[in-house]
Length: 325
Ligand code: NAP
Ligand code: 8YV
Image 1 (cartoon, rainbow, N blue to C red):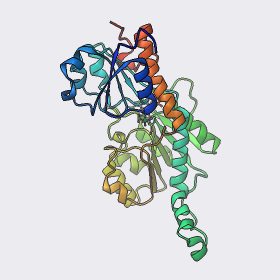
Image 2 (cartoon, rainbow, N blue to C red):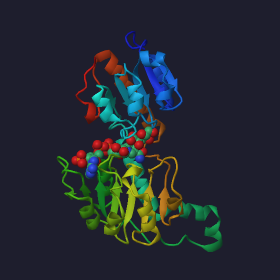
Image 3 (cartoon, rainbow, N blue to C red):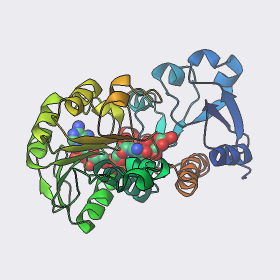
Image 4 (cartoon, helix red, strand yellow):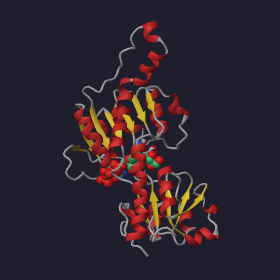
């Protein structure tokens, strides 16, 4: 606790990581509302709230406008698609996220999801637990393997690079697509996602959820990936046309998919639940106590730094130029 930050009111809409809550309670004056609806903001809250901390709860332009003294939004997560950062910038409100501290954890999860998808580890374990090893013999050989695969990364940023390193160590070749070539990265670059999908048989999406990535992985991209194709999504569900993906899995356009993220979380479309050859995880990319604690610390450290030193530690690009009032 510092004398300078304790009286400052931080609004927490909806749920937040317990460690983040504890630290906000210790260092600031916490104000809680059940969700991100601006209707919950009382005149008293509007008068005193100067910071906001959120985990998945949408921070809309309406909520931002309901808080005239808001200076900073600390997002718990590197992806900040749930925060209207462009609107925040027009109001001179800083937005921060939690890069780097989760990179290796998410890359580990991506590799686990890929391996689980290709080698059917969940089905193999179910086989053992159901007594089929004893009753029927060995689990059937898997159609797919990682051996000889050519991987393509859609979104070669911090996490993409960490996944690429793991893929290389596992013997796969790596290529990628970003809007522009990544500095200092020697993997083969494709200026279009279609070009990448045509060149590889294993497409891993770790792109952010933005208007420019919305439903980018569509029927055309899945067809380009081909019948031995494996699609893994550890980025955001909004980057995929889920109906097209379910259809591609059902009609053999691609071979399998591993998904950690979905368009309408926590709801997963029935079409994807029913599709064959899938491994589906409930958005657990960064979900260890260790990594979530590091994310919580970075999000609260941003609030402390803003109010005690006048600068954010990890501003998002849209608000990088915002200065304290
Ligand atoms: P990052 O370093 O900013 O990397 C994002 C990459 O995506 C950049 O290289 C960027 O390159 C590329 N990109 C952005 N828009 C694009 C577009 N329209 N077309 C092609 N490429 C595009 O971010 P990060 O730290 O690696 O995190 C990436 C994302 O992973 C997050 O935004 C979040 O959505 C997701 N994530 C998921 C989990 C999970 O639990 N599943 C956990 C953490 C993060 P250019 O700007 O050159 O295009
Ligand atoms: C979090 C994530 O699970 O950082 C991100 O972008 O998707 C995850 O690490 C999420 O943001 C908060 O629960």
